[in-house]
Amino acid sequence: PWRRRVNLPSDVTRTLADLFDEAPFDICHVHEPFAPGLASAALRSSRALNVGSFHAPTERLVATQVARKVVQLLFGRLDARTASWETTARVMERHFPAEYRLVRPGAPALERVGDPSTRPLRVAFADEEERPALRLLLRALRLVEAEGEWELLIRSEHGPSSTPLRASLRERVRYADPAEVSVDELIAASEIMVGASSGTEPEPGILARASAGGAVPVASRLPIYTEVLGEGDRGLLFEPKDAYVLAGQLTRLIDDRDLRERLAGAAEIRDWSTVTDRFEEIYGELAARRKPLEGNRALARRVAARPTIDVDLHMHTDHSHDCATPVETLLETAREKGLGAIAITEHNEISGALAAAEIADAYGVKVILAEEVKTADQGEVIGLFIKEKIERGMSLADTVAEIHRQGGLVYVPHPFDRMHSVPDYENLLSIVDEIDLIEVFNPRVAFDAFNEEAVRFAGKYRIPAAAGSDAHVAQGLGTARVRMHDFDGPEEFMESLRTAEIHTTPTNYVYVQALKFLQTRGGSAGGRGARRGRAKAAARKG
Image (cartoon, rainbow, N blue to C red):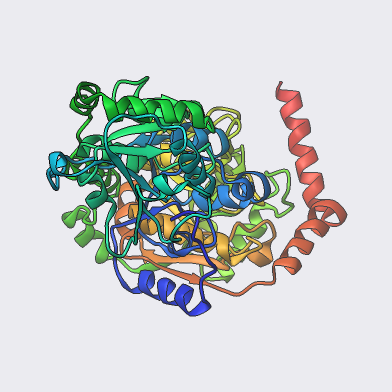
């Protein structure tokens, strides 16, 4: 299937997007989701938990050399990956590092068709490998010196090959149309199956099914074919492109019935039911990582009796290196904009939140102590309801653990904004059980797609959604807010968040960024002076 991709019409892509918007799928399982194609389009549109299966054991040059970064981003939407073969897993891990669980395809036993004692021994070839493979087989036929009677049946949609054969050989070769004979029917009616790929487009699944179905394979010595057949344990091997050795191996099998029976008896039979059981196990593991739909009913009733307030969960003051807004200005603006609570999330600092909390009552605004912490190399994470400063530079896992140790909530900001320092998808998956809430709208992201990706991630794992302005200037405060019932502490906050609504105000990204630049680098001498004063005070204390 990976050799037959075509660009999808736009109406197909739109239909897929509409389908995922309307249907509450739990799992979206795609195969070989390399663009362009239906699988990659489904992966782009999916709002479900995504499983990607990879089968081909060869490198895709365009995907790995030309468009690797784009493909890597697309594959980032996969929540689990499987590979049909260890060889495939190694190829994928080299170019797109991740965990690839091995789930081999089915290779069931087949009921044999026909009595071989009443017809010539049948050698089969399924023309699914690259075209030169068939030409190699036909050249090898000229060298076969078997004493027994035999024939070659080729299943091919291309019809007879142009490779010349002498008349006595042409009489032994027949072609079958795929519309008339399935691969399994071909296997069940044959004693030998040939795989002659040189490595360009191998078909390991056919050889595995042939071995299990009673047709002894003869195959080129490729890593993927050796994985299927062992070192001659379940079939005979020859060096790629070597017609002489291929002819010799065919001669051996045609003339040696005991050898055929011994190799056929060593086949690895794998029912498809074992494959489906393994995938159901993977689906279950993914589904188990989702947050529960129901919370604490008694707590929910208590919170629901309270009035609603607007809450902005992400902002900065001049206690952050890239902001010049004084704490007092922030609180005054919050009151003017009708905010009932705010989370002050300084970069690697809690002093701004502490300073605001001391005077918050005078402004009638509740302050959540928080900090936006830079991890060692896995992006930023916010701790809400923390009590003391968390040092930057720890691993993501250790930072999350420290937030929870303080009784706080783990809040992932702008999770897919690749213009910020963010954890990649795999890192988020590693802590998904520890994430309490996720920022699905941040007005400061440059592209709406970043917020849309956050919505998908929150939805698939049922992580409570939140929002914050990420304001670095007072004018940006409240442009993203959560309307929720009033709360007291993290437990009530989380219960209230279950029924909350997110409200946004359109902003001009360039205008807000320009204000931030002017205030932190060109203007706001008061803000710069306040920071210098705190630095001097800290130095005196030290």
